[in-house]
Image 1 (tube, helix red, strand yellow):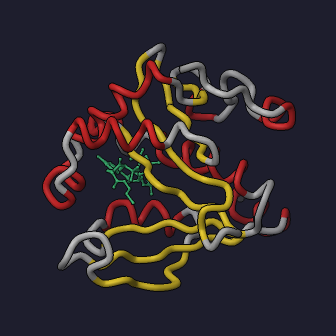
Image 2 (cartoon, protein in one colour):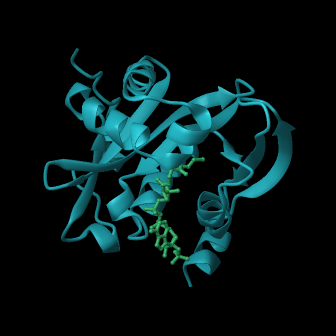
Length: 189
Ligand SMILES: CC(C)(COP(=O)(O)OP(=O)(O)OC[C@H]1O[C@@H](n2cnc3c(N)ncnc32)[C@H](O)[C@@H]1OP(=O)(O)O)[C@@H](O)C(=O)NCCC(=O)NCCS
């Protein structure tokens, strides 16, 4: 299946390789296509969180990611050369039919802590905030590493849903509001 081309406006803000500081030499972010799905599915299936707690296997992960290629969803990969090292899947208005929703994000375990997850989230936020003022996501109550990344990027907990996906696990509902350019400048200082 050939991935749908970006609308012209997106093409303008998504050059082939992003000029983010950490990626200058090693990484770039591109739209996910069919060829990236097997590696992304492996990243999911090898992530302890999803394997041990949510029972996600490689075939389930592959099926999920194919769903992410459908209309209304956006997914991007972080590439090191031609190798996929992380991905993000989100929708522009999936939360309350109004706001952005980050459905899945993961970085290959030996590439974590290098800023790739942050860059993928910022990519998703740039696209989401062009359409709405808020982005939502769910994070497991015990996933403190991911929670720390989200909080550092300005996400706040706005709710908690016990037993939502898996009995015994509470999903925290996090939200980030689009900041004014003044807030943005303060964050990057
Ligand atoms: C959550 C996740 C996407 C973040 O991606 P990442 O590339 O590791 O994130 P970053 O490097 O941008 O930031 C990670 C932070 O943790 C620190 N860190 C250091 N070593 C780390 C490691 N081995 N793993 C994770 N984080 C690490 C980083 O220093 C950074 O903190 P800082 O900016 O305050 O220094 C990634 O850890 C992951 O795939 N986790 C498993 C799947 C998951 O939990 N997904 C989210 C579900 S809601």
